[in-house]
Length: 488
Image (cartoon, rainbow, N blue to C red):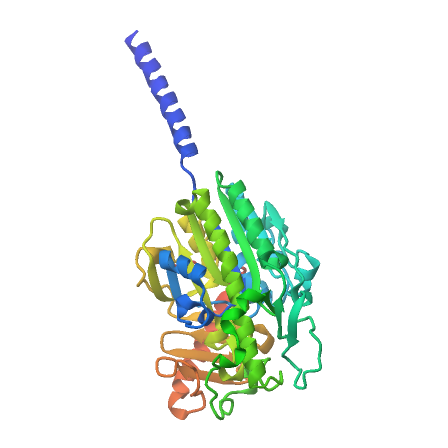
């Protein structure tokens, strides 16, 4: 009898504990993820990174409450391969994605970053440009671009008029006599547009993101919000231009006589003041148009952050703000992306993790590291096959060193970058046949004097050449990361 009573009590206890466990699991809400991406954004255009002219109060607000990374690097210096790398967790030389395509054919059924969260039961959604999407053409059409349907529960596009927006426009590139009309394509065009924020793609993106946050606040979500500004055309409602008028008051980077004399031809960027035929007036207007586009984008970021606060989920949501790569605004007379100099290869990166103290982290990190890091913070499996590194330790110890060197590529110039605390090593061609640049960034942070040909630095050059060869072998022999290189 006693045994029967004891058995009954034991079974009852087990049932109670089982129900309690289920209730506990149901009550524990997993952290959400809000990924906010800008397009073609240099960190130096943000006031939280030191810009005194272009004010970005909403991104600054996030920086004050999160961790701001001062040395974050993309893994490819233009949109398509950079985004494919970040979202797949593999370097471009592992997937072979060097252009504007989805990584899906290369990675097979391996889960992308958002898909990993989707597989774990998250609602995942994309609003506008996360994977590659042509700007301005793809935005005018409102299409999906090189999207990956398996990544998302839902996806939403944000068509806009781009360079066709009503307003006052000027083509700055290839227009020395001022006769060319406003044109589309990857061209430097400034449009001081009529109408309000919602006329344009980014305004629509912010509105949809706000609606999705309100709709899914009670569930677990991974929401990726892609803004297309400040990518050309530099189009924004007129009010965002006002702080930068007249354009001729804006400063340009200091011009250095003979700046190109000691660098290989492959190191000269594809867009320069020379080949774009932009005089000083046009260069200053390009800077003003870029800043106006950044200010407009920043205002849209603010709307999304406000919606998150209003939803009551800010204390349960990891917020990430970044860009696909940096951008030149006249440094070395270079413009736009593609170059491997810091202005193009470095990106802004701000991450706010609930419960963690605000901080500044000076460690070298890469965009490819976001996939394993955010998975780790959310308690998901950190897959050893990934080629990025989990740097979640940084949010408890901002002085933690994640990487000894950052690795980045410029596929169009067959260029490679290894960037560490002291040196920036740029090599063109896997055999270095198109030239080498070596900068002592501890003494020459603007990367003005190329030391690669000086005899006293020959050993340094050879050491980096060998290091780069080893890095490429590691990336390729990893067979899309199946052997794993994920080190904390």
